[in-house]
Image (cartoon, rainbow, N blue to C red; front, side, top):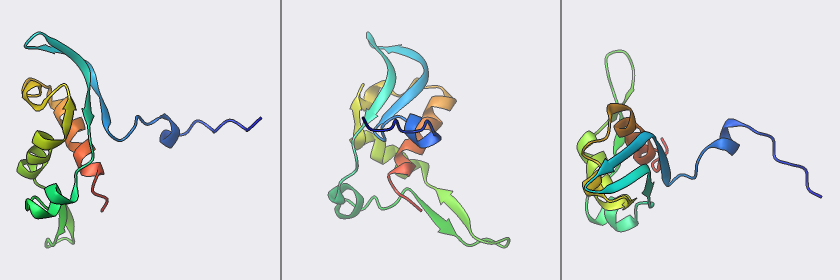
Length: 109
């Protein structure tokens, strides 16, 4: 019998494409408590010109990471599998930021 994997932050994280929300939402008669995303494709990143949703920028105090909300949103319009992009407009700030992080996580720095 194989040894059990130790419980660490990595082993308890949800799969990359599933974002658990802080509460349950009901929008247009649809109830959901997580958002399922698929990975972006080469076409969406490069051929359609979206590029990376964040990058390093120089500043007087050294390099900083800058994220682009418009690019994050353009990815969400394509990547949301469930419940559908049109259901996201009423998400709380906390859950909106969770979705942003999920998109950014597809693009390692």
